[in-house]
Length: 93
Image 1 (cartoon, helix red, strand yellow):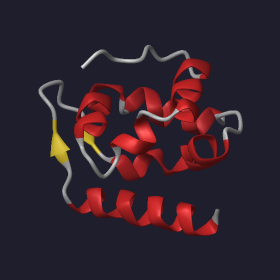
Image 2 (cartoon, helix red, strand yellow; image 1 turned 90 degrees about the horizontal axis):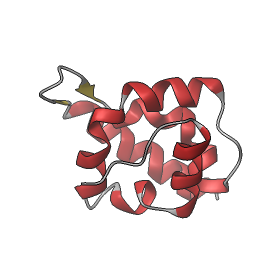
Image 3 (cartoon, helix red, strand yellow; image 1 turned 120 degrees about the vertical axis):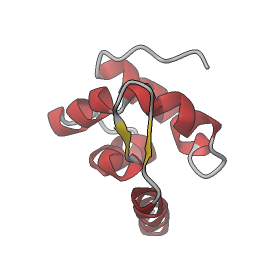
Image 4 (cartoon, helix red, strand yellow; image 1 turned 30 degrees about the horizontal axis):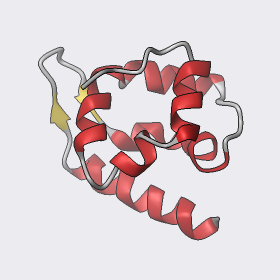
């Protein structure tokens, strides 16, 4: 479990270094979703901080879903539950 969290943190930090803006002028920053790590990895309910970050990163979710480094996390059942619990619609990419 700690290894998964460490891996996720490292991957998210790596994307921080390669921020890619989208057409909606949102800066895609996967490390901003580190507040959601326990929800994604353990299925725990998302915190309000997680939901706020998720909503701010919504325009980037398709980009994350298509990235092989993140797709396993974004497409997981726990991530879908978290997205739903936060009231964010799952994008169709």
